[in-house]
Structures are given as C-alpha cells and as structure tokens.
Image (cartoon, rainbow, N blue to C red; front, side, top):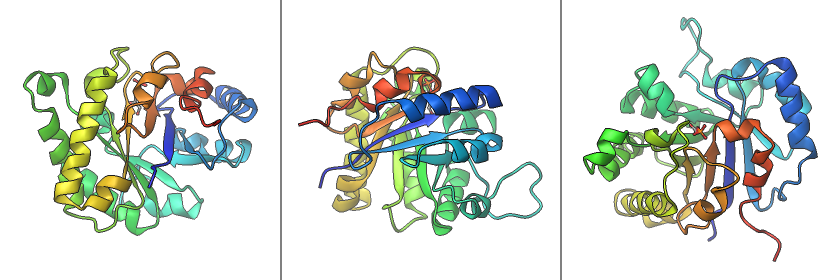
Length: 251
Ligand SMILES: O=C(CO)COP(=O)(O)O
C-alpha cells in the first residue's frame, strides 16, 4: 500500500485576525494537489480555529496544536471532547516546544494521545532528539522511547501520523539533510516493524519537520520513508503552496 502524502502547517503562537484572513485567502486561491493525493492540514492557534474553519476550503483539514485529556477543573486547557464537539479532526501532540517549555513527559504525551484517539481525534504525534542527544548518537533511542511510550498505551495506529522533528532543526534554519531524515525515518519504521507490527510499520506515515522550506522540500520529500512534512514558519507564507506541491502528482 502506498502511504498518502501528508503536509501540516503548524502556525504555532502566531497571527492576528487580519493575518489569518490573509493566510486563508492565500491557501484558498493556491494551486494545491487534489485531496486524493495528499492530506493537507493547518493548525492555527485555538482562538482562530472557528475563523479558519469558516474561511478555508473544505479540502484543508484543521488541527489543534494541543489538547488536554478530559474536561473539568483544568484552567486554561482545551479538552479533546471540545475539539470533537466543534468538528476538528486532528490534534498535534507532543510537539517539542510543549515537551521542553511545558515539561510534557513521554508518559503524559502518551496519555493524551490515547485519550484523543479514544474520542475519535486523529493525532499527529511529534518525536525528535535534541542536538546534544544527536551528538551523543542517541537519536534512534530517543525517538524509539518517545514512540514506545505511546505504543504501550494504544492498540490501533490507523489514526496516527508520526512527525519526526529534530529539535535542533526547528525554527533554526538548520534543516536535516535528506539522508539524516531518511535514516531516522527508516529506523523508526524498523522499530515499528519489530515492536508493533509489520502492517503498522508499512502503513504509518512518518513526516519530517524542522526548517522545511520551498527550497528543500522536494529533496527531503523524495526520500522513501518520508511521507510528508510538518511545517512551522513557512506555513504562514505563500511558499507553503510550493511545499504542498513537493511531490509531483501529475503522471
Ligand atoms: O516545529 C515545527 C513544526 O511543528 C517546525 O518549525 P519550523 O518549520 O519553523 O522549523
């Protein structure tokens, strides 16, 4: 089976109403591949989700950038149920900015993943190593450990996309080489093969994130184990359209 290309735009904590309107207009008028070939996701900040939903063409799917588990006495949080209630299909979980800045552990990310899936959300699960871990040759172990925490809690992988985002490449302009990305994706797929199942390894999309641009997307996206991208900075700009067209679907 071929894995459908997946490109997500993570807007992070950026934008004003005016900017959001401009980005939506840019996306709506852009030449994007047919949704048969690609899943295109945009993840605006929570407060702009309803606006984006009202403006964007329906072939763009919307993701939240995070969620909590159950609703209740959790001041400042948004529950998985709330996202489902307003028909948001996707949520990004375990982004390194949340792991680092908000102290989210592998176990907490796994709990949230399990809960979000149980509520019917699709999850874009982020994993990735720090520069120090890469220099210590711990990349594959770190990524496997982050994935294992989730694998220990879930039974079905149909609604998960894994985003490999090396922390040293996020927002730094220091992109992983296509070979570096391919190596980690290959090893992660092998880990899934040996520790979950050959089917899950074969079918799960593993996308790359970290300084993806119009200039580097084609080469990274042509690696056999790279099934798309999670784009930060460039997803706020016109070049996101070029990134959506990284693969040539016109045969
Ligand atoms: O963190 C990222 C996407 O989730 C990547 O961000 P940049 O593309 O800005 O490096």
